[in-house]
Image 1: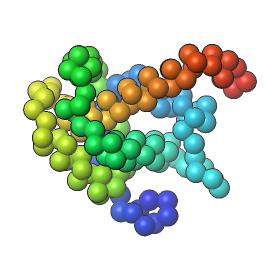
Image 2: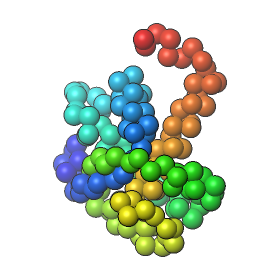
Image 3: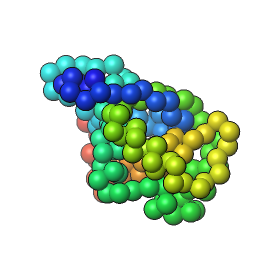
Length: 145
């Protein structure tokens, strides 16, 4: 169940790059991926909350792998050193991801999946957005070190 014990969660393994995992950990350390008010949570729970938020947003925007430019997909598919993490998402999100995956015609390496590729697309977009924010305000993180 989620934090409020209202939404059933399922745990799924996803393959991401080491750089994406390091970015998630750095964003948590800096407090950019916030822990809900009133306490602390294990790292995996915070990452799962962040991923559920990104998935909810992508579902609302009706995103799919078909909407990703081919050159961006190719760049992600070229990254071969993937690591597995487990995230908890809602059963509705899992069903939506399965639908998105079933419609995809992308050829993947044996240890990869379309769900993992979609998660990597979302993470790469988030990383690029964060970099853009940092470029716009290069002193934003000066007081955090």
